[in-house]
Image (tube, rainbow, N blue to C red):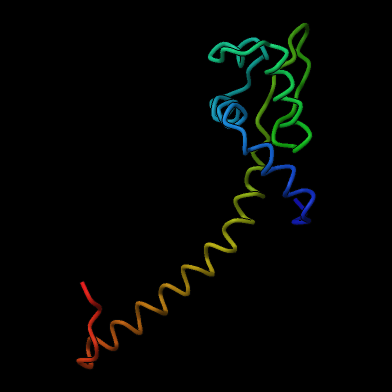
Length: 117
């Protein structure tokens, strides 16, 4: 996934909706049809289809054709790309926290100021 703003915006906007996040969670267990995805929701199948379209535009899900069925599949590569984008910032933060921990341990070993409790 390119890390351009438009691509990221589409994915994160798609995931901002709780219904779409629940659809993603369901698809993490395997493909499902629109009817199967609509079951737990108190919204129309047409509304679920619109949510799926948003997820498709963000490339988070794909559809295939199997005879009369059109199952929806999770796109794990796309989710992995989002995770990688997030991880680059998490790793920077973790390094900063490790540096801070080292400074605090050094101060404690030298009898320096102790953090207030």
